[in-house]
Image 1 (cartoon, helix red, strand yellow):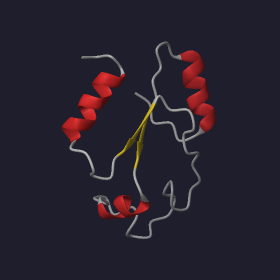
Image 2: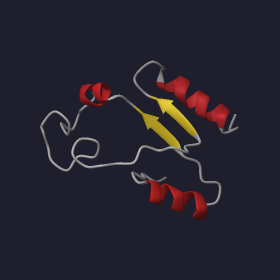
Image 3: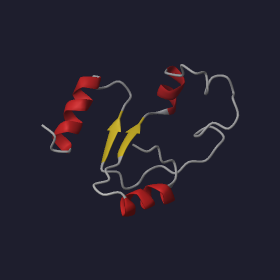
Image 4: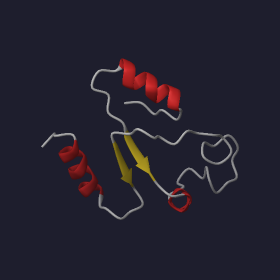
Length: 87
């Protein structure tokens, strides 16, 4: 498992990790603020990725999960299992 905020890191992963799969969990800024348990977004904290630190949005993910609460977590897991042939 890897958290890779930069295109170069994801490219390295694809080239060097056998069977590498990239899952992009995508949420809106509104969802980030609403789910802000650590108060990273609402406290005006500095050095927060997506607020005042740059990041590269994935462009070649194996699958993108729009995780704004439209699907139950179990539905997302089921979809991932089907997508990756793990059923």
